[in-house]
Length: 361
Image (cartoon, rainbow, N blue to C red; front, top):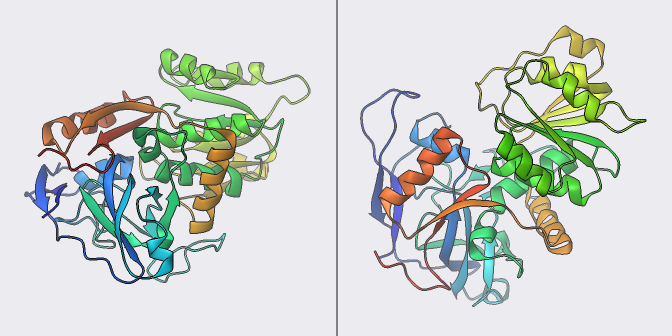
């Protein structure tokens, strides 16, 4: 039977507990008519996986494989033509179900059901195999390695919706501020924005990360640990457009306070997460400036397809910070440690197997 990595239940309160990883076996895959079996070659971590280990994510459960990002080869299929057409193809997986195309949000009354570690979806990508509906696949871009392809789905989709769908400013010449550069979503917004002809600026607490962001197309960056960093950023903006059109943020904290000083009247702040804390004040100064704060999370199946096509057309490559080999609990724990410390620049990836070969466990 195939192996996978899940969390093991131990006593502890949400936010105080840190569930250990454990190796489990999952049922041998038996695809239904319109399903396919993917032998996974790589999977990637997201912040939600860390929150799951801390029991801070809705629906956290046990004995369900972790992770939502994955790439692999279709090694078996049901009998339908839409399933059999995928046989032997390298594919990336739509990280959730329940959201087809509505720009406002999931059509399914149960909401968007993301893979990995919750009771809402039994599938996860930190496993040797996974069974999915054939409609949830996209052919992996040929210019990406397995590690790069695994790094794309969830962060690429989240970045796509936040930037293209929600910001209203994915247009050449617009000034876009991306906070907390180094995380997977922030880096994808940077890549999307630069490819779209925007002037992308970044913030980080690390000068090294700012320098690396510039190498990837950022026009400039500032260290948010410096007092008055927003004034420094305003000085970097191009002549004739001394304002920020949109901020794409995953931290929360004081982004509204800072954003009010940076954004144009009617500017937009898009929030796809709050890693600093679960609350973020919306100030009267933002109201007086007619600013919009728009929540954004994940995206639809259509947005996923559009994102993958853009990556192919622009030859974009997700940034991989570090990889480990196989379903090795100690090595995977090391990736989680990177995420807890915030030391990564890009995605943290587990290379499960190579070219469809089973991992040596």
